[in-house]
Length: 272
Image (tube, rainbow, N blue to C red; front, side):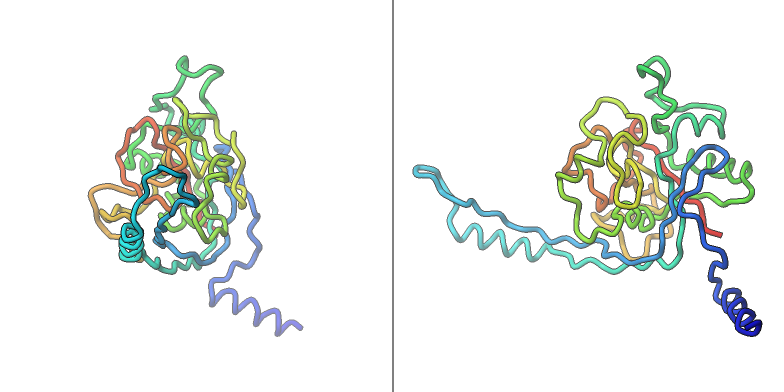
């Protein structure tokens, strides 16, 4: 029995397998809540446009000829993209919510947000911090890592962000589901966690504020299988409170710097 235990321990050490089970959720000293995301796969960049046809043609209504629909079908097939497989082989924690103004203040001692103080009825401490650049997030992360030397924090990669946002979904999110989980069509940010979470318990992955991720933008409509090492600006994911269901999708591959007042972030905490 002892030989079997020693052999198992040796396997864990040599393979880097986590010896102790990670807790499914974790809250750090600043009050940030994190959810454990297990390894997995997804298809990224799949684009299959479809051509809709009227179900009926009322008398007197002008209609397109069949040749027009045939041409549209041909163009849709030309633009279609099969996507590519992405494998995330390491577990990670990701913020249950976007980083709030209160949490930013605890770490940085400032509040750069536009929607704050007297501008917001009832206060904005639980609203996401916004009006920040990608470089600002790096300053925050550097200071947080100094404050909490036990853990390591960083921005998620675009694939980590999208995998967590999808929460196991293979296709794009239906508009009816977007309305349930996304903070959209407003004039200001909202306090975190006002809509339903996704299937993995993450809030505001769509809407409220755009979220910075680690990767550089590749000047394309979808990411590449291997993100660029250099670029002019970084990727934004998730849409903002100013948007609608058309751009509130986890597939959106946007680029900063954006409006500023609707851009925030959430963090990844690495699994030990």
